Length: 88
Image (cartoon, rainbow, N blue to C red; front, side):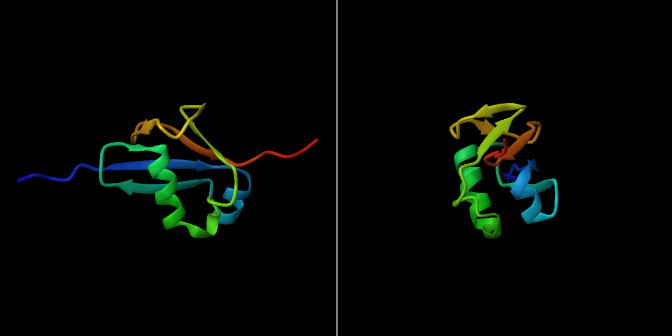
């Protein structure tokens, strides 16, 4: 018997994304032990269209480091979505 492996990811939200979700975090489960940030972006766009992730130029941070979308993340990673920051 082959059991599916999965991971639970906690994703921290900032700025407008936090306001749109009325929450600091998203908790999602994936059907694998890791996922690329590129696939995670697409998954989040489908799961939470109200976030408008396809409309803003946000970045991912993994373990407090800004990362490109080729990196894979797992449940032990600290994942954050950081929208553009404005101010003076």
